[in-house]
Image (cartoon, rainbow, N blue to C red; front, side, top):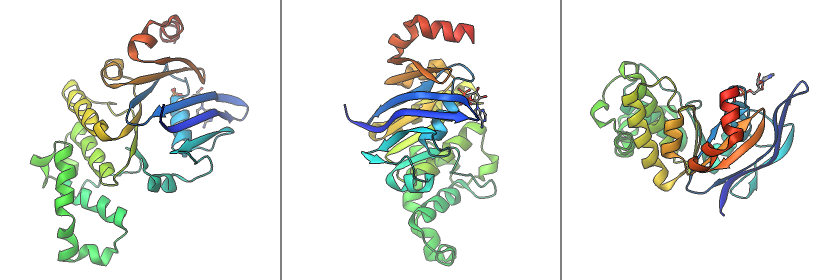
Length: 246
Ligand code: ADP
């Protein structure tokens, strides 16, 4: 198996309380991997550890064979692993196109003066439009981000994340707060993105998890309860107990 992201013995203690306990995780290159579990299972903590927003108490994390345990999130983004919905802010007063331009400009590190010039502004348009098309927002290119529906705003966040050209995306509850139509649109988008990228997501919507995931890791009380495809984990008596008992 070719694991692009791997955690070994991942542990996080908060003042003696063990929120994540000796978790071993291997995310296979090109897969969609979901992290699920009842409330308080340690999903968010695990996600924050993997994206380096939290420092583990013990354990190691490697990305593409490199030890990233002590790296900062921005350095990891440069290696190709990007967390969406947190670092990709959407500016409500800018249009969809302008938002994606800003992301491209940030990635290239062009100076603000260059970006303000006519040449600077239009330079990114073709590439920006590609990302906008990819997330299905082409008819909203000139719409102010603040006027987009909730689901489309999140699609724009994905577009700005794609502008960073990540090899791996980490999605924190991509369907949170969405109605059925947006859930379906976002599921289709995640499938398209996953065609040539690796995705790790924390997601509560089990129907989405069943539909999208190649592999599911179920956490409960900070530990791995079960792992495998949906058919396997959904039959596990431990998993059924954890969900019903939660
Ligand atoms: P989940 O995302 O699965 O709901 P969390 O990772 O948010 O679970 O939380 C796991 C456990 O760790 C919970 O019992 C929570 O109260 C505890 N926890 C999370 N963050 C902190 C913190 N900063 N300080 C103390 N306890 C925390």
